[in-house]
Each structure stands twice: as structure tokens, then as C-alpha cells.
Image 1: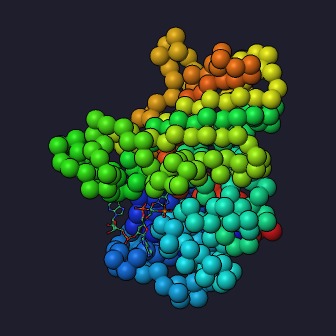
Image 2 (image 1 turned 30 degrees about the vertical axis):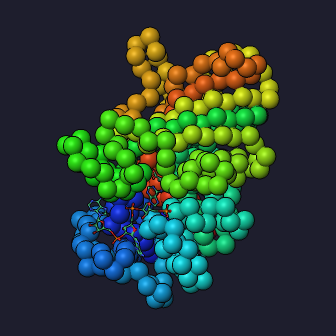
Length: 333
Ligand code: 25A
Ligand code: L14
């Protein structure tokens, strides 16, 4: 693979630091590495592969130098302003924010699900929402065989999704301190409120799961509903997914077989021995775990699933680095 000039925008954040970890673990072919963040963090020293790098302030001139790929995780407004500037300089941006995900010229990609969409990018590729990534990784092989009719998501999301501030709210809340990031205490609580409320009564996190599932599975009319809940867990999102299919499921064992064979999906489904996916087991790993697979006996062709993944790794950093790996490979040709 050709060595690429890589920029990490938002390098000091929770996701940004994880980019560096994952890049190293995967031995990503880097020539020059540039770390960028807000003015606040400019001058911060970060280590990559035994070398010290100084974080530079992101400006309109940051992409004047030759950069092939930029991994962005600096929030929506930063991506709104700077991703087009980078793209105009010939950089391919892999963006973690929600800013560009629904734009018709921007592919929304989970490499195990729709890698083919990478090729029609116009300089910006969107990384889906963490909750969506782990869901579609599991839904895709089932959709291929049984054709999904309707999906009901209920999520149990870790505080790390809300960055360092979310993490601190749980850590300090466990000591009895008042929350700063969330509107209510998260310790000993569940908050049915992630991102902002929209006019239809859903939260934006719920709507993102709905819109993004349709876009990634290439089914704009797919029936999807969601309730997203913040729970007092540090790392990894858990999800209950109820799915109804067009075609009959003759044998539930076939569903388990399909999922066991799905790329980067791990089947953990042995209830007799108390084995099912757990947030604390998924934390720090790159796979998507699925278990509690059973028929929904209230409908004709339905099943229930329990899906868990590390929201900062597969839900953000790892997925983006996987996209960058495919881009780097294509640059080789
Ligand atoms: O609008 P969105 O898309 O909904 O995104 C909103 C927020 O969600 C997070 C991200 O927060 C973002 O701000 N986010 C985005 N995508 C995500 C995803 N897929 C996601 N969270 C989960 N999954 P974040 O905390 O992860 O990252 C913020 C980074 O963005 C930089 N930034 C902000 N505004 C910027 C900017 N960079 C350039 N230009 C701008 N205008 C921000 O840098 C950070 O890197 P910073 O300098 O403002 O603040 C970093 C400070 O925080 C400390 N710190 C951060 N992480 C850690 C940490 N300290 C210890 N451990 C850490 N893990 C640093 O010390 C520094 O002071
Ligand atoms: O849209 O607060 O990717 O858990 C992911 C983390 C939105 C917020 C996204 C959280 C963000 C979410």
C-alpha cells in the first residue's frame, strides 16, 4: 500500500485519540501525519508510533500542504466549514459528524455493509452514527436473505458517546456530584434523551438511526423506529433490535448461522451458560457482538436481537480508519 499523508482533525478528542490508537494497531501506511484541533488545543503534544507530534490549530490554510486523507471528529460545525475546504484541495475527508451524512453527494459507509459506495465520493465520505453502525452490520446479511420489512430499535448508550464531558458526568455523578453535560444525573439513572429534541417528538439521535439505516441499506422507504437511551455505562452501546421480514424464517438456526458468518460480527448466544453480548466485553475491541437471538412470537416473520459494540472504536474511529484503508488501497492503483 502507498504511504499516505494523513491529517487527524479533532485529534485531542475522545474519538481523535482513538484514531491514533487504531491507526497504529492496524499499521496504517502513513508518510506524513498532521494533528489538528481547535486553537484551545494547539501546541498539545500527542504521541504516535513512538514519535511526538504537536497539535496545530485548524485553519483555512491547514490543507494547503499535500494531504491525501483527513479523518475528522471535531463536531458538526467544524465539519460544515472545513470539510469542503479540505475537499477543494483534493483531500478525501472521512467525517465523523452528522453534518454531511444525508447529503446526496456524500456516501455513508460501513465497510462490512456498503463498501461499494466509497467509490462515488466527491471528497467527503460520512462515517455513520455509532448506534447505526453496529445495527446495520448485523441487519445487512439478514436483509440480503429475508428482506427487512420493519425495524424497532431500543438503545442503551454509553456516556463516552457524549465525549470527555459525558464520561466525567458519570464518573463524578458516582461520587454524588451534579451533572454538567447531561440535563439530569446519569449515575443510577436512564435518560431517554440523546442529542436534541425534534418537532416530531423524536430526538435527533433517534432520527439519525432511522435516516442512516435507510441510506446505508439503500432502502429509502424502510420502516424504522427508534428510542435511544443514555445509560450509566462508560463504554459500548447495547441495542435491542426487533426485526420483521418479508420472507418467512423457516429455521432460527439459519439466522444464527448467517450472523456467525457476517464480517466482523461475533455470535455470542449461549443463554444456558449465561453467555450473551456485554458492554464490558465489547469495550476496547473492534467487533460487533450479537446474541439473544429468538423469534418474535407476536408476529409472523419476526426476530429479536441484542447487539453490542464499542461506540468509540467500531462506532467511530475504527469504522473511519477502515474506510481510509480502502481509500489508501485504491490510491495505490
Ligand atoms: O456536532 P456533532 O457531530 O454531534 O459532534 C459533537 C461532538 O461529538 C463528538 C465530538 O467531541 C464533537 O465535539 N463526536 C463527534 N463525532 C463523534 C462520534 N462519532 C463524537 N463522539 C462520539 N462519536 P469529542 O470530545 O470527541 O471531540 C472534540 C474534538 O473536536 C475538537 N474541536 C472542537 N471544535 C473544533 C475542534 N477542532 C478544530 N476546530 C474546531 N473549531 C476538539 O478539540 C476535540 O479534539 P478542543 O481543542 O476543542 O478540545 C480538546 C480538549 O479536550 C481535552 N480532551 C479531549 N479528549 C480527551 C481530553 N483530555 C483527556 N482525555 C481525553 N480523551 C484536551 O485536553 C483538550 O483540552
Ligand atoms: O451523531 O451523544 O455520531 O452518544 C454520536 C454520539 C451524536 C451524539 C453522532 C452521543 C454522535 C452521540
